[in-house]
Length: 220
Image (cartoon, rainbow, N blue to C red; front, top):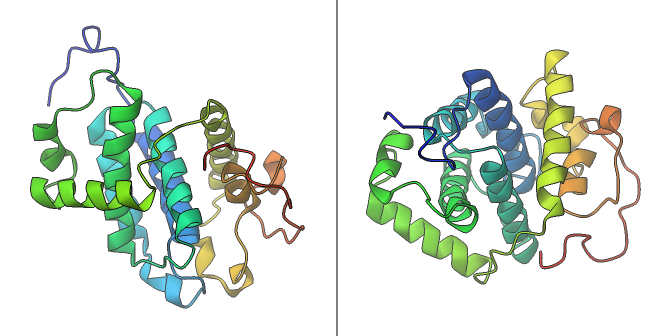
């Protein structure tokens, strides 16, 4: 696909390295949020699915705020359906549906429907994608509101992820037994369970007591 980036301000010429950071972070978030709760069950969440996300984000030409919003909506879905534990394939498909929805919510000129099959490498038909969108919207009770702080929070989490990845932190860290019953503090912060987290603590097991108050992101 060829775009006139000046004529379409919503279109963002994302680099491969930026798409990689985003895709790997979102892959880890999905595994820790809607994937199996044990490290043994999480082994099906292999790095190949991270590559799928990277490729989708690279082809979609969306600003990072859009996948950030989609990730937030995934968290909202999980809070409404805490029993959710999906396979990697189903988790990626749910994110794709959330990404389409987030694009429509944020951008006045969203990606045309006819482009999505190519963006997702024809892994879903348009009818299947529409069905997944409707199922996801039903799952979040059609609440697509996005508090303004979500975007800054996501940017902070992405910054922390880039730091640990430059130190060769594994993207499949969640397959280790030390993560059973735990999530990265970065993800609990993004979902509103922690009021703050320091960058150097973001992706290491942290068993601090969760904030007892409701989510700091209204409308989750």
